[in-house]
Length: 165
Image (cartoon, rainbow, N blue to C red; front, side, top):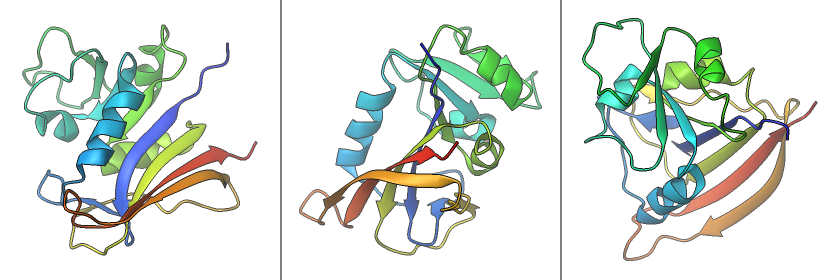
């Protein structure tokens, strides 16, 4: 079975994904989708993304790319120094997910086969951004729109892209 490396991200219309090492918005449906898609899989992230978590995400293998390996990490976290080593650490998973942050997404774009994007229909002030999706390299294969409601302050669209080989 071929490995499919997937980027999963929520990004605003201006590609904003975070500010001050935190999320900018709250979309409960998107968090639920993130959990459904990533449960049971490897999740690759940078140290700052890992540091933003309240703890380990259940039922996922955490792989953290860090240039500061002497930082404290729980025993169950795999620490690597580059993206290629992160991919090697996913050898037992045919569908690992890259979950951020901005620097890691930039590194991952050339290695990934799929993008699961939640496009938040608003522009936010941010200090971290998702790279532009080059339409010559990626094909949109599905989208599902959601209007704002009493649980979601912003409308959003789930978009799935596959890399054009």
